[in-house]
Length: 241
Image 1 (cartoon, rainbow, N blue to C red):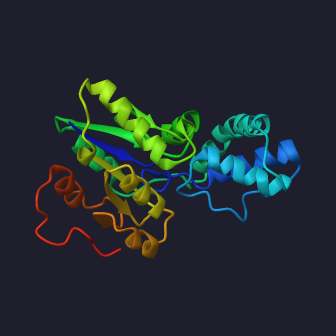
Image 2: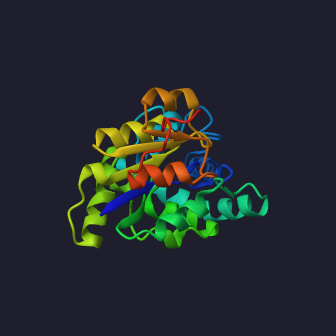
């Protein structure tokens, strides 16, 4: 059994800044601080870490657990409206080629597709629902599974093992993301790693993290399918980014 874990923001979809706006509005509503996310990079981190980082900046001190929970609740209350707004503005879009790749992978026996995203699970479902891709992902690891990306990736693999009824060997897990943090977390967990440069990560930083496969996006699914199948690519798997 092989497991392919996809990051969400910048890898599957681009939600037009819906998450950042929802978090900004949540902090403003509860603490009166505007644009709390303006100086903070949210990409490649978990929501649990982001909520606390944003609150620390807004409050000038570490937040309490109760404050962090309230921000999460306020964020999830606001997020659906922000995602709908992004869809109306045509700012919500799929990363090119991803639907075709998922369809091809879904036809393969012995391959399980899952999410490996820093979004808390309810937020991931809200963001992904308009894409039509949710049906491809029966399980995942989420930002509510821990503060680090390694912990959520391992949680996803545990769920894949439970779903399949078989042990999943680390070398048969493929992590696909759009930042160097995705790549480093996958490597730290002992998994295979690939990355697209069409998302939120800097191409130079992604290259420095040295994933096995780099591509601009998924418009050409063949390198991705060869990589997951374990077939030679006929050329270097590290395509120009």
